[in-house]
Image 1 (cartoon, chains in turn blue, yellow):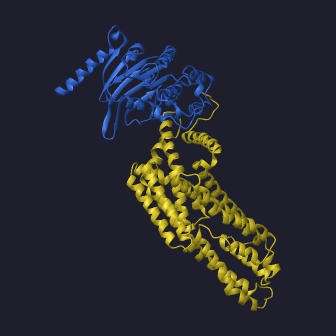
Image 2: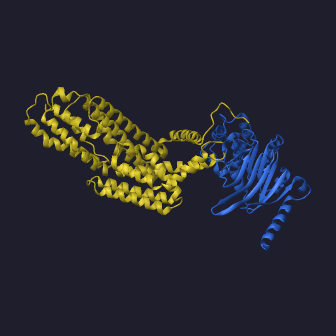
Length: 244
Length: 383
């Protein structure tokens, strides 16, 4: 058995008659920061949603910490820290209420001082009792990140989670995620910002039409432009498809 | 990980309950800041009044049953009132019929529960008036229109029922007519008819030793006919109110709640909660397949039992099921909403046409309000 924290085997997802994921295989080792890139509609978000349990696994297998997500969803999800989309946050709850609820859902009594400290660090400390509906998009994103980081989960799933943040918050979060990473946390990170991916990730996978068509290790892009590598690979695969 | 091993494993329903508790707390705090401006507050107050009315009514009927009185609600109250009159005129024997405790208990219970039901009806109408006009001034007129007769009845009838005997309580009992006009008309007819038909005959009847007087026997026989009157009233009178109240629940309370509940269910999928798959898969699938059933069931129950009964308490869950299944079956169907609104308006108008002249316009107005509300709902497309 592989020692990967996250294992995805032949994952296939069909949505509204379209096969969005067409047999994904990936391993994410403990302590690894894995990037996911791809054009819009290539299947990144669907992959993350399948791994976190928002979409049921239709075919194939997702294993988190050795637990099959379909067979043992509760223990499998305990290892996950999921960053919700801002639109999924309950707008009538204050951040404090939401964090308490989220903590309770994860088996704790309420959110702890470390979570509130994180809110402070992200400039949300003053807004704790404000309804989330009154938050800006970036603030909601930060609120989601606080919830995702709650309880030091061994695996973080981040889907474009830094994209709406102001530069200062982005730097702070990057540092924070770096600390978690160095402490052994694995991160699956979907993004379109190649500079971010290049700076943070140990490995990057590229998706196109629900398939992984390329991947690069940190050593491979060292001194090179990851975006150029991706575009070249994408052009090649699209050219191949055109030939066929 | 900071998990608390002593805490029980949270489940999806428990998560939902916790979320609901937080939301209720928030809404209550908001509402208390501006109670009259809060549709949510008025709506839930209405629901609580409805529940309270049922509890009061059933509890006192249970007591009456224990004391040896009849348990059929309206018939028992009518019988009790007639007993008052009969005792006053010496037509019934004090020791046999007059001293039964339920005779005093039932009218009070009836008055109390009617007050609560009227308050509920007023609130349901307030919600619609408020919705239609979006004007805070409109609701108070509706409230006074429906609450005043009930308040008058309770205020006068309580002391009269406790102390006085004879025609005074009966007159006060018959005094108010309100929104549920058919039920009131049926009651009026039922009470007055035996008085005119039976009392003269009763005066001529000699007392029978050891047996109830013939008047009492005839009265009881008449009482057996009461369900027919009650059915006539029940079939027509509560329907507009039921529809209005149901519409208010749909539009103002459950629609937004269920939208949020749907979002909550989606969110809970990413948390380590048990029962998630069951909730998401089985229940929703069953609701999707059986979507017309809850609505039909609700209407059938309302037609069968009327205002005092279980369906009113079932209104909330039945409505939730109906709305949920409608949302699942036809997630975005303005035409369906318009159709439902039209059916509601037609029913309201139908009922309005059958009413006495003075009360007809009232329900017609309600029908128009309903139509406005339905249109408003369609335009906002947010059931």
